Length: 256
Image 1 (cartoon, rainbow, N blue to C red):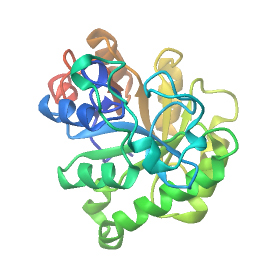
Image 2: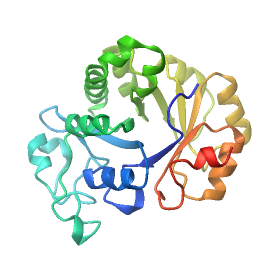
Image 3: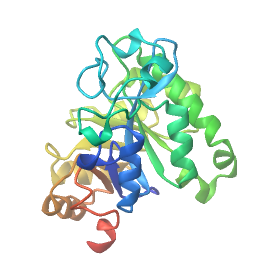
């Protein structure tokens, strides 16, 4: 149900580097992580970029929204100064180049489709098509090679539907802050292989239900080692963390 790495660096480098940047990816790898979670949305020209917020200003210097600029304009913006002076000039990554870098370094990817409002289907389809093309060899080979294929996750049902239609072979996961009634039918409608839930609202009973239904179970964002051990004891398959300094990449192996 979960053939993927068990501990992921959230947005690349967690609290140790600016999120969704090459600097974050490098910091995560320096700490031994070969699995990360990051966010993707579309620029004005339809080119996907690695960003979390639709609005500029929090992590990317500028004004307006991601869809007000072409991808190359966003790539020229500063996505690092907010975190620290040493990261000044860190660019907004283009999704294709960032994913290629991850693949070249053997970094498994949980690609969160994070569409700006109104761009749900377009974002889901674009990300899925690119992932399918990038991992065409692994998808054709099948078997153990499928564990290297990225997992597409999203809170947006429309984005997951579009991803399924565009590239059905690329696996999908439903992001849910809470497991509301009907969660299983929602997940099955997009042929999801996993549920990605907030650990804050998850109960042991819900964890058991997800596993009994045949889904992988992933939690976000777990920063306390004590809580991490508890979740693993519940049967949670994997989680992402900001505290890559406290929770190492081999944490799950050390706490079986």
